[in-house]
Image (cartoon, rainbow, N blue to C red; front, top):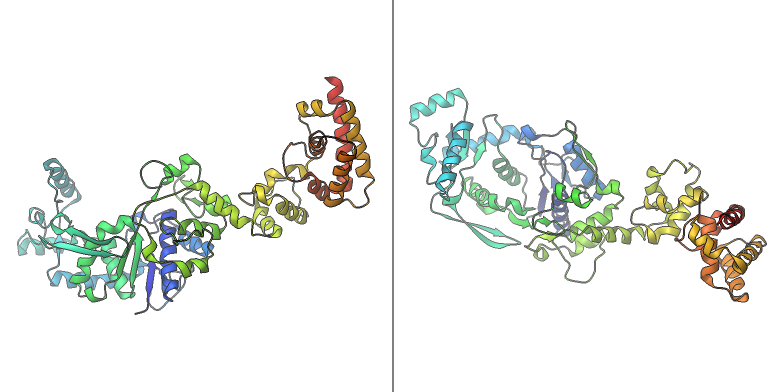
Length: 511
């Protein structure tokens, strides 16, 4: 049977990187086995639907190059792929479960359910209120007589619950965790169908996976406790032989301490947990994204791939095609994967260094400061090449290259006073005269001239190169001063040196 995986998010808000990792693993597994990757939107809970969330999911997948073979926005032969558009499909399977005795009607009000839960908590019994042992204490078609049930059904205020068998060990075979068993007496008779005519996640999930011929369900660890219910539903509906294989991925943990990586925890540490920036349409909630921060999609994919999986080798940088070739479920770990933002930045730097200056310029251009003109693109591309070893994100170029666009307005007084004095001052002036005489003002000739001058005059490199750098840039650090001068050009460099010498004279005379 052809391998088919699916990514089935709910459009209820931001798309956490944990969800995107699930999509990535499902995509890699499908492509590794020449299968199909399906995008299905699970919007059964209409009360939590957020406008724009569905588009955000699709945009995130497109940014990362994880294009589904079929699904919402992509078409396919198993649609519709939005659960709210499949509403008519589920009722027949709910009716089938009721007729076979595997589901029943429940009429409890929200107040009654709350009161019962509090009673259960107070009694400290392990079984939930709607467990197989205690469902008869609730208001449903099992505990009530036929006449009362008929009257309540006519009123239309009911739900349909699954009838979990009593005293059974439900076995879940997981590709990552092995065999996991659950005691049915501790399971809840979950709602399968709501009074608004929509199925719950559990019912729609199983029906859709079956009808869409999904062969492998790859999802987060938080869904493992729900899996025994899904296993039972496959059995009750007569689909046990075609039930998909399950693989529950480990949690993504905070960099330090206990617990999973949440937006709140990430906000405190100063990094996002979402692939793209997001603004909630009806609240003031918003968040930055990895794309807007300056991460390359290839780097973000590489980061996610290693959050729970390893190739069994020392290799850390993988293209998407390499990940497809190497990925296997049996190398996904059970324990939580701790997120390391510094490592994520390292990945981005590694990919950044493979880009051309022109590519980096294009990536940084939308964030250009006001002092950069529209005709400065060639210059910025050169600066990206020059500064690439110092960049974590393309837009870092702006903070590191300000002096190329704006002449220094002030100089480090302490350094100037220590270097611009006596014989050293005269030697610097002599070097400037030699630089003015250069016919080929390129980094190689500038370096040859400066170093030759220093050696001929038995000077200290620090006493000459540091003042020269400050005269050109106003700062003490940065890339090669010779390359800086070449990019600035002879005319600009000479003007800056003349201005700086005048300023240095004034600074030292005043002291």
